[in-house]
Every structure is written in structure tokens, then in C-alpha cells.
Length: 88
Image (tube, rainbow, N blue to C red):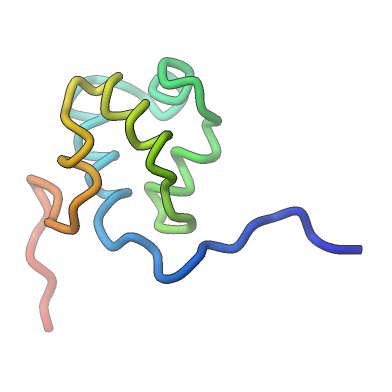
């Protein structure tokens, strides 16, 4: 029997999850509150924040709308506003 779980296509987006977490906390949302407001599953938000799955653009747009930011603030590969530079 085939597993219904999807594997991420390609590498995981390097900064999406940390930016979702930053903006979610900045706006005072819990994971469940953000997910409910965006109409997506709580487990999906958690998976993004833990770097376990890639976002789809439609869901990224829903989250950005709830957070009152432009989707490009999540979608580009720049670090989250409070992220410390990684050491090489």
C-alpha cells in the first residue's frame, strides 16, 4: 500500500518557516490561531516552522494576508527579521 504522505519536492525552502514563526509571534498569533484564520491545517503551519515541508504559493498568500504582510516577505530567501546569521 502506498503512503499518502507527500514528500517535499526539491529542497525545503530555507527561510519560509522561520519567517512565518517570526511574523506569527510578532502579530500575537499562536499556531492554531494562524492556521484557523488562514483556513489551513495546524499541522501544516507547524511543519513549515520546523522545516519539514515546502509551502504552496496559495497557502503562503493566505498566511501573508492574515499576517498583514506581502507574500514576498515570506516567499523570498532572505533571513527572518530577527534571524541571526548562520556561521559557516
